[in-house]
Amino acid sequence: MPNIHRLPMPLQEMYEWQHQGACANIDPAQFFSPDAERGVQKERREEAAKVICQDCPVIIRCRDHALSVQEPYGVWGGLSESDRREILATTPKR
Image 1: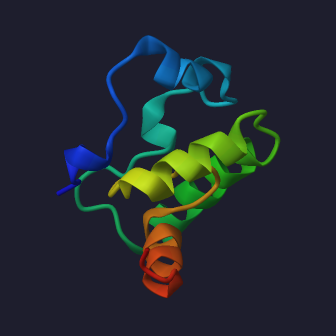
Image 2: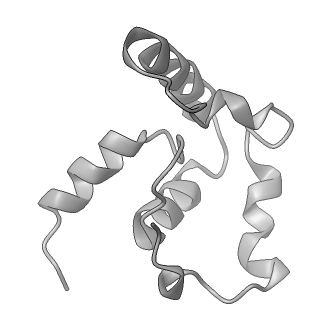
């Protein structure tokens, strides 16, 4: 479960960047796993989502957000759930 205390204040300006994302008009199902999705099917969906992220004008902001609040689900900033877990596990604690 995400720790909501890491989330920034719920100000529209804080999240405005999301409207500029390459994913803004794409079905969220492309980025978030349905229940019980596993294996090759999940890998293909995640890879397709990462391709969309590659040319996104806000990829760095999206990635930073996902890492800072430790988003537990979906592809954010070109990183899957497992990618983020790996990065966070190897990042020194502040």
